[in-house]
Image (cartoon, rainbow, N blue to C red; front, side, top):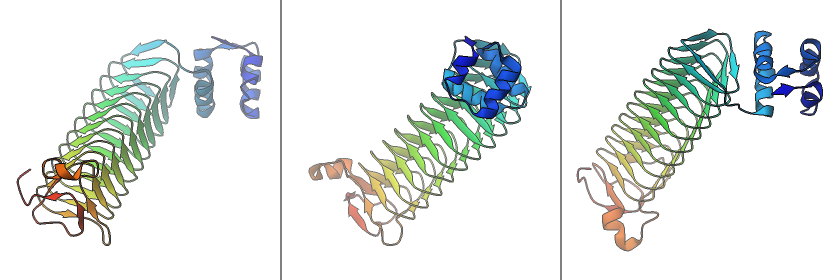
Length: 290
């Protein structure tokens, strides 16, 4: 793709960025070489802006490893080893690494992000497709995954976590901001949210669920230990815990919200060590093992 002066100007770039282009590429430039030149000159935000304007390509870059200050590539990155980036790691399409992925500011892919080892971002992590990690994921800011999120071990997110499909985590999940998942969340360990937890379908954990605000699941909730929320607890179907179910002071607990009353005994069961206070709906089934 040949990016000419007029072509760039029509996208309304910032004045400083356009002056840089005129100084260095007044006769025009191919797309990826221009991205590379911007990154090399420290104009990483301008490179990301350019990628936003002109979109991804079908190019594939295959290398053994990446160790750089920043990478902005319009196509797919395929790295046999690990990726270490000081600031921004961005691909117009997918990022695939046989080892770990680490970036100091942001990791962003237009499609999938897949790592054979762990993923760590000191800023954000964003994927237009799936995210899969062969170890843990640690993100200090927001994490957004438009597809499915799969993590073999633990997941930590320092701000809001938004997933367009399902979440599967082998161990614990800790989210400092709001946790929102459009489908189901399954965790082998505990799930801890420092804000609200909103799950479109089912929530299934091997250990406890702790939520600072409201806890909601469109289908059922099953928990290996206790469920403890600072706000209300709402489940479309059954609500099952091996230990206690506790809502916040003044808030209620609701099960069977999408189940007809006649079917509550089968599909809107509430099980816990003792009957929860302020159980507003659902069929109390006692401490029957879940």
